[in-house]
Amino acid sequence: MGKATKYVSKKSDENGFIDWSEDENQIWHDLVVRQLTCIKGKACEEYLAGLKLLNLPTDHVPQLKNINRVLKETTGWECVEVPALINFDRFFHLLSNKQFPVATFLRNRDEFDYLQEPDFFHEVFGHCAMLTNPAFAEFTHAYGRLGAQASKEDRVYLARLYWFTVEFGLMRTADQRTIYGGGILSSPGETEYVYKGRKARYKPFEPVDVMRTPYRIDIMQPLYFVIQNINQLYELAQKDIMSMVQEAKALGLHKPLFPPKKKEHLGEYV
Image (cartoon, rainbow, N blue to C red):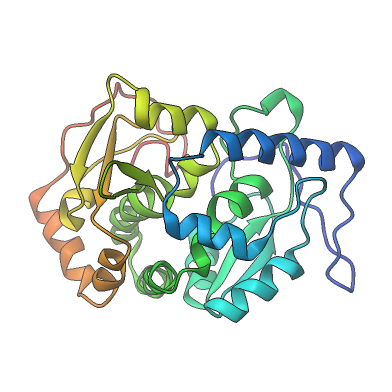
């Protein structure tokens, strides 16, 4: 959503099949095997349950039609192929129709550890398992409906809500914090930082507070918001989120917990 990318999404054929190369299959294998080890004992139960339902292969890149079969049966969602970058109009429109955008390209070896753009691994391994959960799926759907009707200014506040939940959300369990945000679940560095980062801070999830909190996409997050359980997101979806946006706008932004950076596109510092 913004600046140009060097990656080009692959297009499926008339049967919905994407022809992944042997190199891409190997990259997928290496990414999945590494991250399954990394999230062990850290991912939330809802994510692990969804991962079991998806039954993602490790020896080759999965086909979206197989993922969609599971999503449709569980929550009525589906993945939709998109170019590497899409604008916010398209993004919100898709979510409002229970369609999750997936860029059909995989990172190369040079960017194996970190990729700023969301690739197929991030979208599928990071997000699709949670979309099998009804509470999470309902929150994401409500978010899409609101964003589709929101002004450009209000979307910036909604973007922060998405960032600190769907992308970088944590959940409190009996004995520790667990991960449900796809931006963490698909990143070995961020996964480790959540638990071992000396400078990481944690706050109870409060929507207005979240929407007042700036973030940057190119650093380890200095702050994470923690929900009590997944139903907290479902309950939020039933409330007047746009009135919370107006409250956040009236109160103003919190001081950033990171050094400033030149604003290249919406999302790097919002």
